[in-house]
Image 1: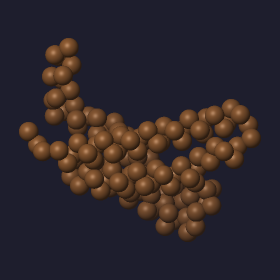
Image 2: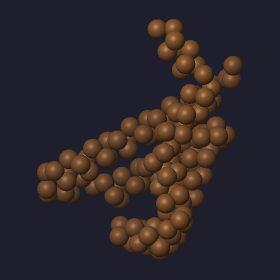
Image 3: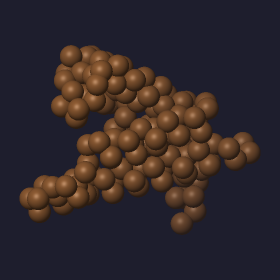
Length: 134
């Protein structure tokens, strides 16, 4: 229907889509920034050392990458950084193939696949950002 195309073409919709696409990252980055001790403990839990350095780098990537995508400035860089972060997070935190419990394995596999789909969203966001502006 014509109304759906018109709504989809509104610049506000693209902005809203970028905010939603990055929601898991900027919200996590804010939580980590407000509770750096908890962020450091999370990194230590996953065996990352030095934990404080990994926590700080995670906050910078999550907030900086999200800001770049949301503001549509250097979108390719923000989307790329968040994509690389997501690949690494999957390798560290969602190793479903090592889980014996079938329910836990399914849950982690679903999160892994969701993360891969988000990478597809970042590829799309970067590609659309490089299109000529109308």
